[in-house]
Length: 601
Image (cartoon, rainbow, N blue to C red):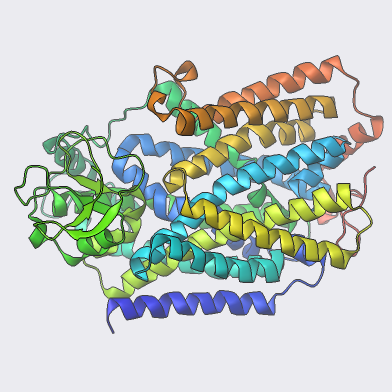
């Protein structure tokens, strides 16, 4: 069976499994739709959290960006991993004890304000749609190459799959689908990593192979990469171009943004008790660490393989994988000196994806309608393909390539489903039930949630078809928005009794507006000015969420001390959720027997 048929088989089987689980786990109430009836086992919740967490950015793009930028890409590893620890250990158990359905629900009740709830809903929508753009783009990339369809068609197919199991199953269906998706994606990530680690270093454990010598050489993997990079005119792989302050601010934005991501926080609302929430956090950290400790090795191996394969090679002699990815629109070559060889040197890539024509050049290459590179560089490589193309570059068996395709789709779809659920629940529960239509029945609320999810799928698809940047960068923006809006409100809501509704609302608005405006200006309005000398304090748009967070904290604290303190019952409630309970028994603020949130007002 050839690789293409294996790909259809693996992808088709995984989709059939997801749909089967969604049908079997169909939500029948808002409690099941929003938080899976709060009956998910810690291990299952840990795997589902891992799948929710390890999005297309982690599976597809993180290793790709590390592969291209070297040391600078470490900000994603440090920020996302550190942020998860912060969320799991310091925030999630307290939020679970509070016992609400959504993050806006917590904000609205904690700050005794419908305005605070509405502002939180707006923040959720901004963050989630920014994040989901990267996921849908990842779906399109995988489909475009492996199923040989246009990227936009791939996005639409992904929309159809997500629509089915997110709208039908809600959190209950998504949870058990994500358990299956975690198994698919971690197997798909590790199998080629083990193969390639053996080929390059002789060590079957990628994490150890990363620090080993290259087979047949006395140089380590990183020394080999530094040498190859310098020969082609690039900076050393282990060098970085970002300033120390920008590295710090990006890492911090990713870290605290993680602690404010609503689709990850809501996962801890699905366990039966606070103790189970803590257990599931530990399991999730273990499951996530398997991929995150492997990513630097995969990035380095992919870079070595790419440089060895394409540098100064004749176009006609390149292996089949190059033309496959070229046809998908994710690799392009412009023979500037007409020598028939690929010159891969430092050069500024074209903004956005190359615009292909139906014509072929004199060498048989796929022509583009505009220059894809500046300076002497002739090669355009989309960063998002490195993990996906790595097995083909290394000439691994067809079944491994097919497995990676299924894993990439699992990563993108799992997070997309979680984000779409958060959007739909925020609209149906927090906006409609808690604000505009408080008298609607449980059945009507469930219908509204499904309708909101359907609309969100369509909007997410449009973001995937017209993405603002490569996947990891888009996700970084989402984390920055979360850092600037939710994190201070959640942190002070748990640990600072004096914080009132005026302070929290003011801080969220200032943080979100500042961060969003900064990103939009430098990435969309005036991208030509996006250089360190023009940035505020030398901080890039990817790291500006940290400044937004500091503004949020500052404004919140000043405003809260200029206005009245929260009511005594709110201060008592804050004190109560921080007091540990024995035996996993929860406070009266958590849930009633039917899984509905108990009112604190």
